[in-house]
Amino acid sequence: MLPRYFFHLYNDELLRDQTGECFADVDLAREAAVRGISELIAEQIVAGRPVDLSHRIEIEDSAGKLVCTVRYGELFTGSAGAENSIPNQPNR
Image (cartoon, rainbow, N blue to C red; front, side, top):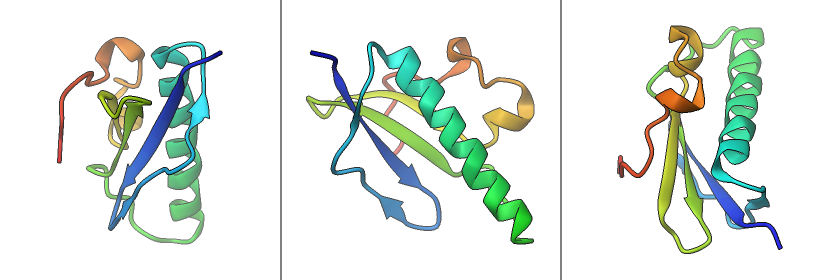
């Protein structure tokens, strides 16, 4: 059985993921978060709204441990690679 990861969105409000998704590892979960952020940013741009680059997605494992944080700004600075993610750093 694949591990379940939860994607909590911190933008203008906190949206906690109650369902999660299963991935083989945290790197694949992180890739999904980057894709999700890309879609959210595109929606903001199309709607003519500003994009706050400090917004983020925090990924928790099924034990509730923070395993990775992906900030919107990482997609613009070229640091969106997994080696530049912020693992195990609570940002609450």
